[in-house]
Each structure stands twice: as structure tokens, then as C-alpha cells.
Length: 345
Ligand code: ADP
Image (cartoon, rainbow, N blue to C red; front, side, top):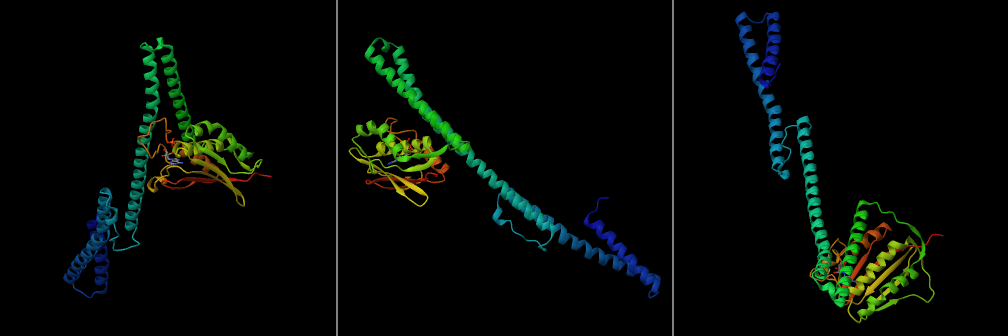
């Protein structure tokens, strides 16, 4: 049977009226007409009380839930407040639950939208970065095919340029693979004890020509034969050193200096790379670790990288349970620091 508030009220009122009139009839207080009138009065009173109580208490609550749903549909969460007559009412609870679910879902939708926007931006950045070396190599090779190949001097020059572009492309793809592996969380650090001073010397050797080309002096602030043993992934830390010192050379001032030194702590060593270059403005300082973030966006690829170096370095240092701290002053230079655990006995 389909029970609505009116049928329920009729049934209950009839039951109450019957019981009462049966009692009155049994007690013989009233005549037959009196009993009929009493029954009618009791029935009508009961009906009105029960029907309107239901309407007011139950159906108003449901209307309340619906009006909340309407507001949720319009994403108007602030105005969805409890107007219920009974706070412990199950209907109020349903309404609150619906509200909470809707709010959670909306948060999920917002996060997904944000992720989608980031993915779109990432794809645009990647394609832009890939395009540059591909177009360059393509241009050189087509020029050679169009006849430049017959002149040996031009041929060698163009082949070298095409090879350089392809090397750049290779480095970029390697960086992208590293970033995606770090973000997936599948990179395991191969930690072992090693001498970080020796590692710094190797990086200096690798970059000394590049530094010399800008007349920059590299200073390793350690005692001769000093050894500093740390427990870390040597190859990955090598990559961090190359990135930081390479940046210090690229963004340092010509005729400038780069210093690297180590400070001993209780459990860890702090490694500092400092340059006296152009520095980083405050508004950029927290963004330089973002993928593809470059302060000078117009810069040519010769003087700068893809904007992935610091993002990768940050991942590596974080995988060693540390972080890269940066301080910088425009015109004075930039200092980057991170910590490495001391060697294990
Ligand atoms: P890139 O490949 O462009 O060098 P990075 O991720 O290594 O990318 O660095 C991001 C940006 O941070 C650089 O483009 C540069 O603008 C800025 N930056 C990094 N290191 C330095 C530094 N030592 N001095 C000044 N600016 C720096």
C-alpha cells in the first residue's frame, strides 16, 4: 500500500477515535448520538493534529533536503546550512551527508581539473622543447641535401651543428625520462660511502673548460688531500653537482668566481655552491625548481638549458631526505645548499 501523510493520519485517527468511542460506549456516559459526535470530533482532531505534524516535521524536512540539493547543484555550499527542526533527525543527517559527499566530489573534480591543466601545460612545454633541436637538426640536414654538402668546409660545420642539436635532444629526453621516473617514485637510490671532495674535483675537471670560456674561476674550499666521506648515491649526486655548478657558470658573471665548500654537522655535511653572478629576484626564487621554469624565457638554448636541471636535482636531493635551500641577491650572486648523510661505519 502506498502510504502518504494523509492516509497515515486517517488510519491513526480512526484507530484513536474507535478506541475512545468504544471506551465511552462501554462506560455508558453518552447517548448514541453523543458517541457518534464524540467519535467524529476525536477523529477530526486527531486527523488534523497528525496530518499537520507529519507535514510540518517530516515532509518539511524532505523539502529542506531537496532545497539543499538544489544549492549543491548550484555549488552554493556556503548557504547550505541546517534549518531542521530536530538536529538528531535522520533526515538532517542525510542532508548533511549529501552535503559532505558533494563537497568531497567537488574537491576531487577541482583537483582533477588542476591536474589536467598541469598535464596540458607539461605537454606544451615538452613539445616546445623537443621542437627546437629537431627543427635545428632538420634545417642543417636539408641545407646539406640542397647542395651545401659539396663544400667540405660548410658540410663539416653543418654536420657538427646537426650533431650538437641531436646531442641536446638526447640530453633533453634523458632529463624527461629522469623526471618522469622520479615523479612515478620508481627511482631507487644506490647509496654507498664515497669521498664527496673527490667527486667535486671530477665535476670541476669536467666543467673547467666551460668555466674558462667565461673566465670564471672555480674554488674548491678544502685542505689538500682532504677527504669527506658521505653515504649517498654517487652518480646521482654527481648529477646534482654538475647541474648546480653548470648553472653557476651559465648564470654567473663573466670573470667571476664559484666556490664549493663543506660544513660538518652532527650527522650530516652541508654542501654549499656559491657564485657571484647576477642573482635571482625574489619572485622567481621559489619557482626555479619547477619543471621548465626559466627566469629568462627568451634566452637561446646556447646559454641555457631546458629548465629541468634544478627540478631533477631537487628530486635527487629529496630522495636523500634533504632539500635544496637557495638564497640570492640581485647583482651579488646565488648560494645553494643541501645536506648529505655522513658515511656509515
Ligand atoms: P636551465 O636548464 O634553464 O638552467 P634549471 O632548472 O637548471 O634550468 O634552472 C632554472 C632557472 O633558474 C634557470 O633558467 C635560471 O633562470 C635560474 N637559475 C638557476 N641557477 C641559477 C644561478 N646560479 N644564478 C642565477 N639564476 C639561476
